[in-house]
Image (tube, rainbow, N blue to C red; front, side, top):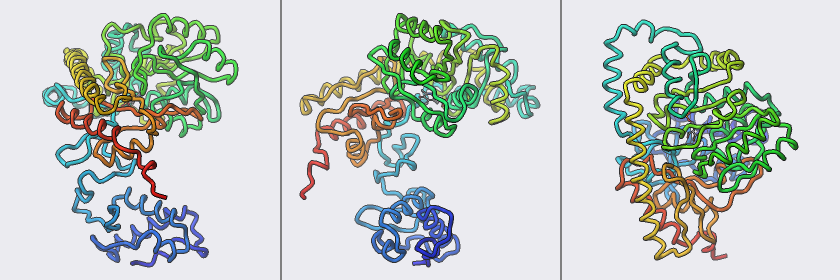
Length: 484
Ligand SMILES: Cc1ncc(COP(=O)(O)O)c(C=O)c1O
């Protein structure tokens, strides 16, 4: 074992957190060859004793070293220095730390079935991209596409974005349609435009975790507003506005993530009336907007001057394109464009061009149509498997959510708590997210998980994942099996 004592202990004068210093020392020892691939590290307890730190500190240090790809290990086998050549060092179905979770389903690696990521399956996208990139490379636009552009994006790209916004009934022009690097980036620009650190933005009691972490990074406080089965409650919104003096409302009326409801038009009109009465700006996150045919109008159509509307290509074409699309009040356009410039200068023009071509030559509409078909097929499969599972788990409910939603909300039967269920499911080989991941502030959601049906390759893999989930539900929670 290398000398890690400088990393910790009473004489350490390092400003770094101790666990990070220990992870750094492991990194240095791996880099200079003191630790070699396959070398076994001391047990948590031994190292803690040796360094005069707590066992928890060593556990965190090892987690950090694992996150950096330096070490690997399995319960019962110990902790080893990882071979950098061996990308499969983690045993199949071993449990990745939350931060090291695969972002895609990887059946070919024998990895767990990943129902935790909200991503549309690839249907026509692969082939379409091959053609489009070949066409682009032969076009006379290469000079432009490979150069710097204005932060607002190329005019042709904003025209296509305005076209795309028209599909949900929003009237936009190149002076109100703005491109960003994904909806996450668009939300981030909207947040920083409307609120300063310490100020409040209201939202649903459960919301997209990416927004939670972005708000935390900007120091903006999210405060929850009560919902019912139709979405935000107008009376609760009115009260929250009076109580918190917020800068804006951030909301997902359509295919809310994670609850997967669609707010009906009559409710949207009631909410719009409250917002108009208080002149409160709205950030409407509508990334799933194209998935639902005959959808209610976006809030943007009811409150055009108060709403910053956010969507993008991630859920209706492919997340890897990283093109976000905003419809912003004309008065805010240049401020928000300055936000794009300050954060990334501009959207990659090549990706903007792929979006333009797909919107204008019908590829985007064809993908949307295929996704609408596919999502219903997957839902039918999920419902059938859950109906089967109730034979052995009579209290198991079916997952809840709109028929066109790729993400579903599954209330867990007693005695399950979401965190322990997720850990059990993970051990059985299927990844899902606990309701708590979406909780805003001190809100405590009921025991439930979010599962996503779109990430997995095909129906066979989805079936495997749902069967594993059903098996996990019928197993005994570990905390009930404790002997002492
Ligand atoms: C509600 C919501 N908003 C934004 C995003 C991020 O989208 P993008 O990939 O375009 O950044 C997601 C991704 O899952 C989402 O669910």
